[in-house]
Image (cartoon, rainbow, N blue to C red; front, side, top):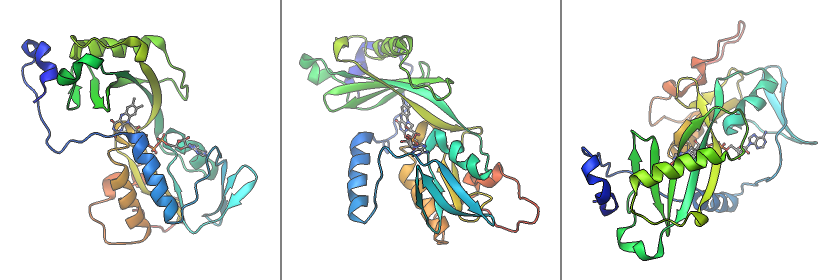
Length: 257
Ligand SMILES: Cc1cc2nc3c(=O)[nH]c(=O)nc-3n(C[C@H](O)[C@H](O)[C@H](O)COP(=O)(O)OP(=O)(O)OC[C@H]3O[C@@H](n4cnc5c(N)ncnc54)[C@H](O)[C@@H]3O)c2cc1C
């Protein structure tokens, strides 16, 4: 199924193939999603920091973005690794921390189209993911606890290139085409996302998806919107509920979802 692995075939005991697995370009996905949302009336504010939630009588009454205040019926915090920064402004504390990861994208060698990678490969022993993109290959991996720092550590990039050469040892990649990137994965302490209501009636959270946030993005958004709209749920939402980390405050009589 994957001729690009023939050079390391003697090292492989076997492989597991998931026919339902898919790959794509997250950047293109986000841009097209934004275009469609825009057509439905969504207004995006870029390079704008949400700084503080306002609270009165145990309800959120507004969101401050610098000097401007936005008022809504329901508020959703989905700020990835930074979710806690906003949630803390109204006294909600959830265990979400950044786990830094890296990827390096390299152009496919021009002469190697027939032998270039066709399907994504996860090497569990090496902790590396190698994915084919249009005319390129991306290798991703590593989990580093470096707070909110997003500087690119050259050693981590070298490590990833080393993993790539173990999976595809005979592909003559041009290292000058290598584009390194790093990002922060929002990790929860139990590895399960947080999707649902907080201790505040009109404050919801959709965060903590760790290393699978894109995979789970559409499903999580569907679950959360069904919860907010009080619709019949397509699945049991309890395992994702923030209630597992939040305590009912005395005097409050609110249901968690
Ligand atoms: C190297 C690497 C490879 C990965 N590969 C995959 C993969 O193959 N498949 C997969 O499913 N997932 C993958 N992930 C994980 C995925 O990227 C994350 O799970 C996902 O991005 C989390 O989405 P999010 O929207 O919750 O958070 P983020 O993507 O972090 O987005 C949160 C956004 O909120 C903004 N924000 C935060 N605070 C504020 C504020 N106060 N005001 C305004 N804006 C704010 C941030 O700037 C950011 O843009 C990978 C991650 C890394 C690092």
